[in-house]
Length: 505
Image 1: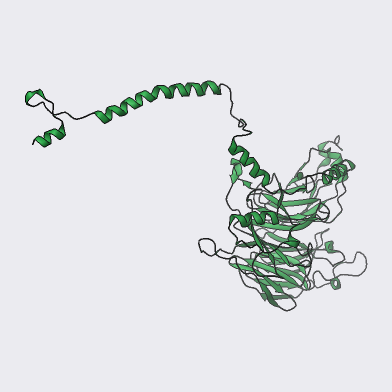
Image 2: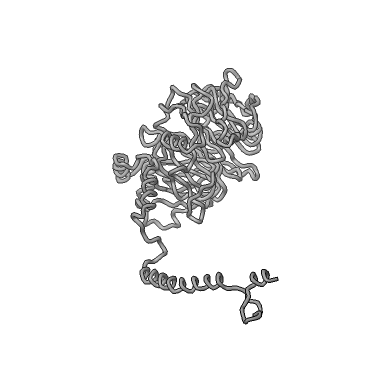
């Protein structure tokens, strides 16, 4: 309640800062929202952030020098959130109770874990050196008591199955439609699909053709996402790169990408930090997330190293075909912008984005990164609803599926915006029309910070000064051309020039 003194709203020893949207009163937000998420930071701490209660709770102890790199729900299929799996930088894997923080089981994998997800045979952990580890007891229904509220019955130190993949690995992702396979890739290690049942690589991507200079295009895979839930009939993989591109593959039809999108081309360009100018530099895409948002629509969220979070619409992908024009050409970039249209950007993020997660309802998302803040956005109104300061650099985030109950006023606003034209994707044609108008001189406005007072008088004075200077300049030019060097006068008092004197000699 807004009249309660701040001393009574203390959260104990945990220090936090929670900024809520000014659209609604604080008591309405606290009463309406039912959302929480789990974060992992560089000091090995896990923190529950409960938005509705304005509380930040620690889960477990600090592990100095051993950062939390990955998080995933690892409970049985009926209740995935019964346990959470954690991967540390040292390669240590833990299975914890998300409520009490008690360690239920622990295992060991290779250091620098790039992927931690539930697969068909357990929990998969893929490290940067190509070592893949599967903890079979985690994520299976057999390892949990059948009774309601039953706990983990697996071993405290379960067996770990390991096999080697081609290194280096920058990211890996399990296919949500077929958990028996996963995709992986890295620097000069193009995208590959590994089948856990066959224990072999069943598909390997092929690089794009040489560019117009006949030079090979480097492979710089940084993040991978599957879109099979959206289109089960196709094996669609979206690959983000460190040179600011998104490649779309269909493993069922071909090895080369269908098309290649340049992030920020035409529309959706980022800003150059504090300067506020357009940033043309190709920024690495750190993380990506494919999710169903705003009802039936699907989108992919991309976060880069400059704190720019973008959303692209995937509605055209089920019927996308191979581009006839090779990547790199301007016509190919325009085609890719139509196949993967830019929908919107999310402002206010400080620092590099390390991870992003979307609520199961599709109405909210959380982004974390090196700025030490966790940002909560509404996907329907593209506004920041909350911002939480968590003191340490954040590496990963995991949202709970707990239902989000909003106040009646906010529900009505969301319904009105969903019925409106706010969700129409941006194609970039509007920007091109505006640029043409600017070139024609139409719609010119005075830039902010400048004044147009006395502009006509200044122009008249400049014209007068230029008119006065023009005759003087012309006179100087003629003098230089007609000036001749004179020699001493000869007989008869005639003046001889240098040229005539030479002839006389």
